Image (cartoon, rainbow, N blue to C red):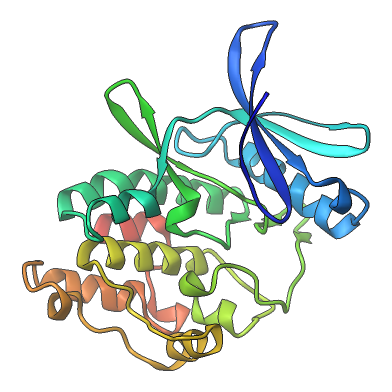
Length: 261
């Protein structure tokens, strides 16, 4: 195995299934977290959520298990770069055509997730991987670790009343730590990503996390055409609805968000 990277919770390795000759990625939870039931539950929820969705634009989970008390997830091995790196490499802005090509498949995957009771809750450019398959770029949604799953008996599988996610892409209701979230929080994050891709700017600013969250909760976004005048004026109406502070004023479903975009 060769190490691909890691963070505070775990590490990712490239490995090979020698029985079938397939290259895979293995995510290992760090041993110091393996006895923490909350962390282990989050780790396993990632695999469960991805398996519930099973979409061409969601990373495919192949197996889960434990080795000497340490949980692991085996998933498809992806070559490429994440959307955040891709945007940065292109100078911070992507054409409208490329934005549609890269983001539409992700919106489709998120819409399917919502239909199956899964809310991702941490959609951001770093969790959209642009996998290279031959001459194609295939966007893949990653990391369902803090997802919320509604089981068939309507049990919500995750903590509530806690602000979880990446601050720059949190919806206002996430920033407030609302106990009840729905798919419109994910759609907000997708709207944020589209805004950045189209304009090269983040709609909210703050030197510290607290300032950023206050901006999300209180400021209105600048119309995209005021940041990038080359955009068609219709984008302003789309962004205003996609990033409305009240979730009841946003697009209600991924399909409607996608069709309007």
